[in-house]
Picture 1 (tube, rainbow, N blue to C red):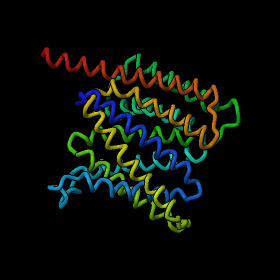
Picture 2 (tube, helix red, strand yellow):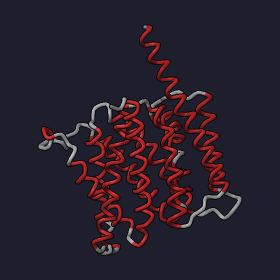
Picture 3 (tube, rainbow, N blue to C red):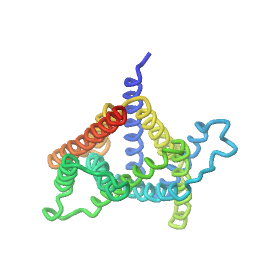
Picture 4 (spheres, rainbow, N blue to C red):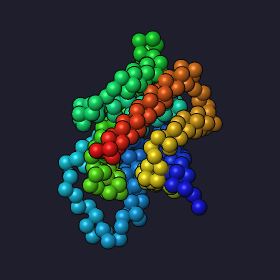
Length: 294
């Protein structure tokens, strides 16, 4: 019988594997329009969530009193998703994953303005270290800046706001409802791209493309389960296995070898996010301790 922490580790590992496989399929799908790939991500995500909605909620599962916040979560999530899809198709897999680790840095900045949170010297130091890491990876002003480097950064910005809205929504909304509305918004957006010309996939490609939605759906569920069973500070370091998987998949499938600057920049970004996570846990413990003492 696994302990809660062991279950948390297991779910986090499974989540990382699922997200990594989804990233590989998205990169592989370069012959299909992005809008069509979005359809598979959204539609099959919806199908997956219908299997986990509680049976007693099937007749009214869609009811919410926070439609506005759901809209903001979906809008920012769509921006992030489209950006990461473009980046995955245009840049080395390890480079995209490395930059995507910077999302907590932007979340810290947004939390100051949107949640009125106080950020101390350690987290500001982490933000500076993270931005140095991003600069090393992208090399703006040193070499010809590839315009596609901007898309992983847009992804981080969008994902950061998603984290803020989910933090607010999760106080009253179930995880599956938040995810369902996002998958629905992806599907609806994809329909607007039909005039650009979709390609009829053969059976093999249809199955592979559908895996984008299925792996995306189960990855989000496993990630939530991981945080449910274990402390964030314990399982978060496992997230960086995604870079190892990206290097392995990138090398064996596309013959991509990460540069030294990518690895150094990724290390700085990882260090900065670890500082942020540790400070969040420290501040949480301080608040809990004061509450107990009071």
